[in-house]
Length: 291
Image (cartoon, rainbow, N blue to C red; front, side, top):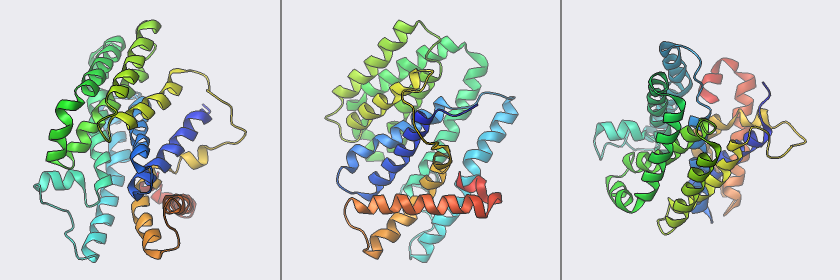
């Protein structure tokens, strides 16, 4: 089945937005929407074919194997830089889940979410899952004034986990968007957008979710939102690898002094694409670590 190029392009844009956020360049607060959209896609494209054991094995190979690999890489970088392999200031469990580089928190989190979703899919009707996910997404977004201050006090990875929950529920809702009545599904999605708009005063939540949900409207259509003259799938297949490697390349670009300001994330993105694309073709056996 040919992949929809509009969604693949948004996947690429999301990867670039994550690099922009981590670069700290101007406008990086807005670019956190890239991670929100990434989280939505992670549950929206969660494959459900296979037995419980097959799905668990697939999740492990797809998410935890590369996480372990890059956990070791970034831990080694920390040691070579004179830092602890894993920061343990908030305890060993928080340290391991957050990872030697904070962006690695995403992998064990989404692994756990998908395993839970697989279990839920086996026991509940799709309509119930859709409506429950929508209700939970609305509840989490509306509750931002309650949980956001406390999550920031707890720090990583609790702050990231609580921030990501609404996106996971939204992705699950969109996965089964057609199960409830269409009018109801549209009303729920618009309600999410309106509540996200109300949360704009909360940095890191309102605007990123507002943009992320707006982008997610593309997923409600079963036909492409627009036609692209080129096939971007080869580039979109690099996005997970880009997510893993970009932090190293951001530091390299910043220290080199060859780029400044907004050109730092642009250069890091281009280098990340080149590195991942090259490794995928030169070392195909390592593909599971890169994409």
